[in-house]
Every structure is written in C-alpha cells, then in structure tokens.
Length: 179
Image 1 (cartoon, rainbow, N blue to C red):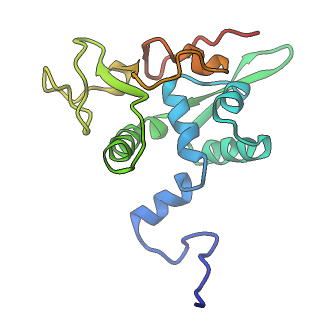
Image 2: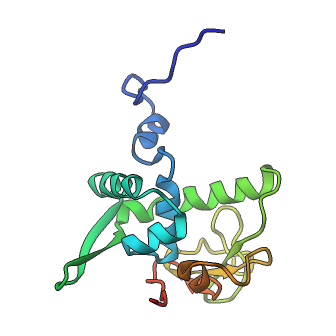
Image 3: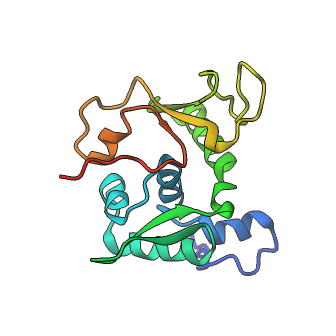
C-alpha cells in the first residue's frame, strides 16, 4: 500500500495547530518542557531524568530557546554553566501539558498515577482545566504543587526522580542532590 511520507514540516498547513507543532511537536520536546515546569533547569538533570540522547537534548534545547519557549541563563561563571528556564511563552504551555497528561491518564491503557497537581494555597486537586476543585479558581501555574502519586517508584535510580518524590511547587528550581 503506497502512501506519501509526511514532510519534514507543516509549511503548507495554514492552521494554528500545525504551526504550534512546528515548535513543540518533535519527540522529546514536551517532556523537556514538562521537566522545566517541574523545576529541572540544568542540562545534566534533563539528560539524567529523561534518558534522552545528548545530541537530541542539545538540538531540542536550542530549538526551544530559538522559539522563545526557554531562556538560557548563566548561573556559574567558572567554569561557565547555564540553566534553562521557561519564558512567558513557555509558561503559557501549562494548560496544554495539564490537558495532555489528564487525557493520557483517562484514555491510554496502563498509564499509572505518577503525580497529581494541587492548589498550593488550599491543598485541593486541580481539575483537568487547572481549576481548584475546592475554591473554584483557575490556579496560576506558580501556585500549583506537584505531589508524588501512589505509582511512583519509591527508590528511583536517578537524583532528579528522587528529588521529585517530595511535593514541589511548579516553576521553582528543583533541589537535586549532586553526587
């Protein structure tokens, strides 16, 4: 059965979904953005947590920076070391990630409950649209607490996953123990 292979981009698609996929549609890209929400900021921490090939991580970080989703900032001068943080454009992806995760849990067989999102102010869970189930407010991403779920490995093999075993406010740098 012959078919046309998908092109490298969506240049002929005049649609906002296609244009968004040009920025965030490649494999690994949304997982990098997800980790940035979790507070992962350093190259080695992305590498360790995601298990992503180095060349792919470099390319994805560069493309996210060029697209204005991540900002690279120097945190150490000698030796020079940079971190990656979400820009305002990147933070605007929060509803997309929340919806995609909610959809995955509800509609993909075998997806465990690894984490939940709660309103830091009152402790109530968020609904699939980011609204607090207790107070009814749409919770700004910086007021969202990431809480470990029942299906998380209690003794993960990498320091980023170990740091994520504790409740953690989104967009706050994750405190990863360095070995």
